[in-house]
Length: 100
Image (tube, rainbow, N blue to C red; front, side, top):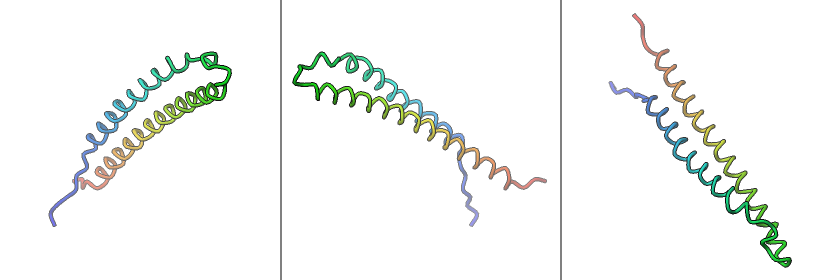
């Protein structure tokens, strides 16, 4: 007895922001690279026998781009949820504090 749990909500918020910043930058840089040279490879770069490869290439690039956008959205959502957790802990702490 006598021990208490303290939630450092400022640390939770900082972690959420840091995580979104670092990972978000990597996702953004990856999309820039993906949308540069790989998109410039046209179907004409493949021989007439490689039509299936050309189609697979363009579909794979499109899928990867969509996947990176989804990951960025999930990252923003994760950050928001961590901020909600910190806000709930702050509210609970205020509600449990005895006032004179």
